[in-house]
Image 1 (spheres, rainbow, N blue to C red):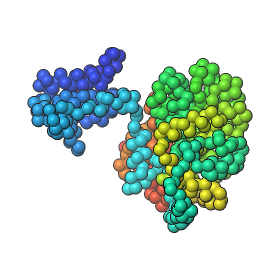
Image 2 (cartoon, rainbow, N blue to C red):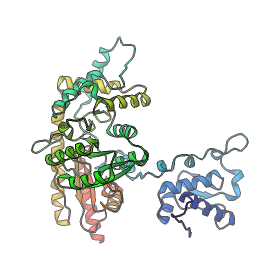
Image 3 (cartoon, rainbow, N blue to C red):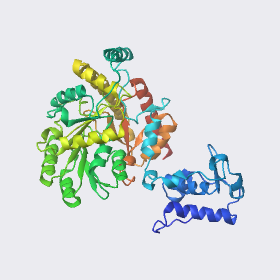
Image 4 (cartoon, helix red, strand yellow):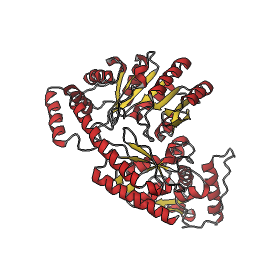
Length: 494
């Protein structure tokens, strides 16, 4: 099928494809019952995003020129538009359903979903997951949780409802003030907004701060979620390279001067995906740049408690004397799996605005999770469990690194992280991480290939991100065996 797409034309690409296919259907070149390539295959053939193809197919389906059925893909229905299935027509008057693919804003449809697909598959349970960043199950034991949740409910037996203020439970925010003080951060109850997760916090901040055309500076590689959240606001992400000490501050300063960003986003502690800790010297330099150019810094610091060797590093926020830093912390790696909890610490104007957004988007913030966290911070259980998380994660990190050391003769390289839950592993020369991750997946192991953390998707093709937080040690061993055997198979094929 020879289809020509000209991305330089003013006609949207999806519409060019739809028009080309419509012409072939009406001319008889694609007769009734013809099977079209799947969205994925057509996208690969034409060098397009899969969602662009889906949008074109959606146009033709809405016109009654295509049928689709789960498991059998798209077939031509040119001579049977009048017999289109009921899902394409309303019961009265033959009116067609809304073509939702066409209605949804194109930049939502065109988001790269490969990271989400891999993250979702990492939760399937059948495969060994070294993909999703989820806390170790079992540290908070079921019987303890049942007892503690029951006590919370009994303590509120006379309440008419279980209401949580939009800023977050006041008792929890009081405990978070103390928690922040252990990191050298001064805050108050009115300078903390409790939310569910890091992405929610960043989404709200982008909604508050970013206008179409604005620039955000980040490290590269960077989580694809950051890119997408900024892009959906109409902003753009410009990336700053990293080395073994974190973001290159010379380049950062130059880009701040030239790009005039709305803010700088940094994942300061045991960075995702590289596991690098931003050095103390560069944290001071970041503050100097922020203050000199009056540009805010958004610091994401979820893994900072997971230090296994040496001392931790003071957060950038602790060095902030002018309220130029917005601090995001998540309990995703150190609390009960499935109970999402994060918070933002910032100046009162930011917190008041975040609270307003929370009021618009959440009718009732999560009561039980916030009360449970407050109770554990109050009685010290959280800190005891934190020590247990460190011990468990340290053992698993060592297990992963020992296995990778044994693969050094095959050409595997990495830098052992001092903490966190990620190992940024370089595969042997000539092994493409996207293909490697795909073959590993088919054999029962989920990995995140490095290219998803880069804007061009051409870099990072030599790396995979290994996450060891969720799986127990025996399943990690199984996964690492699959990793090695898949790699040996690749090298043998080559």
